[in-house]
Amino acid sequence: MSKRTIVIADPDDAQSEALAALIGDLGLKAVRARAPKEVLSQVDQGIDALFLDLKSPAMRGGHLLAELRRRPVPVPVVVCTEGGRKSDVVFAMRHGCVDWIDKPAERSAVTNALKRVAREVRRRADVAVAQAPAVQTRALVKEIIAKIKQGNMALPEIPSVVHELRRVLSDMTADSEHVLKVLEKDPSLAARIIATANTATYGGRGRITDLKSAITRLGNRTIAGIAQTAAFRGMFAFRTPAFKQVFKAMWQGQLVSACLARELCGEARLKDPDEVYLVGLLHNAGEPFLLRVFAELFMRQNNQVLSMEDVLNVIREWHTVFGAGLLQNWEMDEYFEYVARHHHDIDAYDLSQAGEKTFRTMHVVNIADRMVELIGPPVYPTPPPGPSAEDSFDALKLKPARFDHYRKRAEEIRDELADLS
Image 1 (cartoon, helix red, strand yellow):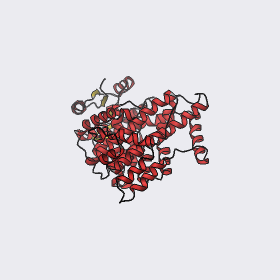
Image 2 (tube, one colour):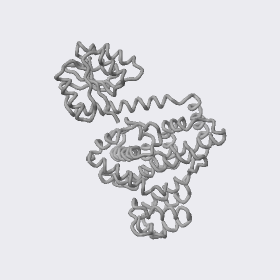
Image 3 (cartoon, one colour):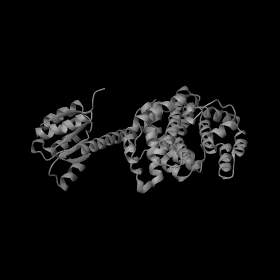
Image 4 (cartoon, helix red, strand yellow):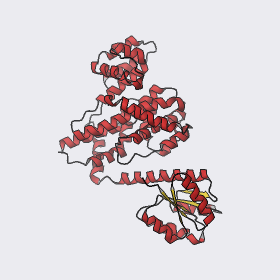
């Protein structure tokens, strides 16, 4: 794969060479341009970002920015200059520049600017995807919302055994025998719990063949999480092969993300890994729900509603809204609903707005999701918006060296739980 190309628009040889060296050290390809014509030629060939000396008379920065805005494919621009005034910064931002750094450029400033470039590229891709669905697609989404409000479309309900299990576990005096009696009412659920208890992800050592031993090994709260996992999985069934395949990828991703989020809790200083596991499992609940809705529409209308690509684009855009609605309907805590509604919204990752616990959980879940995207298989052609895994590592002050560890753990969990998805 070719390196990403960064053009440095600066006629000052010494300054541009120093900046090119910094960019090269970061694993990117730096190309120097000494005049506007060279810049535009490079842009037309395809580049990933432009570092521009806005104050250089030779670059005619104002005219160059105006010309760049007329190009069909926008290029992220970082201003790298010296002696800029407040009015210059305002001018640059109004013309779509992503960042402003002072010359001589420091490594940390260049690194941060490139992170903002990456975020801007993701944001523009998200806007393009959001604008892509046709009028027919928008009409279908409105129809779905209207049917739900009118009570003409049934929302999936949590099985009664899960409600009963919650009630039992809310009693601090409840022991494993109480939990056992509840779970024995649902043989299929009991079988799934036993299968899960035998996986390495859940510490399975030595074969377990009965429910009581599984409860003893895992404890009441973990058993409750597995029961809710199995119940959630059982809400969705698909007859069409294409929908089955997509759901399998969705469900595998949600399961791996939940397990990985639980493992991240210690380093992220979150006290309740079982709760974070459940958040990780349910925060994308809108995905399988909308997939089921479209599968039913396909069955009723002879597969002539939308292409699968259109379906996935709609789910990508709308699953947070529908997921938050489902969690509200299931009477989950507002904390769950907040994560479901806002986990793709960068502005919602705000400590003062979300609070310490939700802030940390959002970043933990985001890391888990990004690791799932990294190892594949991908559900969407373009990843959903939100912070990068690196952004969340920084926010939680996790050691960068742990990145590869958690990527590897995601692969291991995916392989361990393959039979459960």
